[in-house]
Length: 124
Image (cartoon, rainbow, N blue to C red):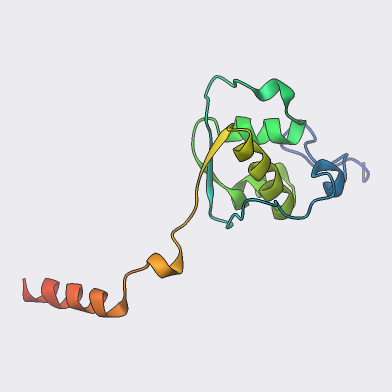
């Protein structure tokens, strides 16, 4: 059937338009997530999941046993990345998930420090 949506997670996100899932939001007002930001469910027993939408429940279920990147969540649920970012921000605000963002470029060591470390290793 050509009208039958493809889904790996019980039709999550396929019968509702993305703007309806996020309440018309295209980004979260408080949180910015990179594609490689890791998300993990805070409570492995599913506490607090009864009050979330199906798409958010699917994210919680997917992130229950291991940390999953935003891009991977979007791919598995076949949802736009922007929708997953908004939903993960809402889940973070509800204390249902923990996130680990990648380090910022400003936190990276300087080239001079890396060169000094390499020189020290060569001398060994």
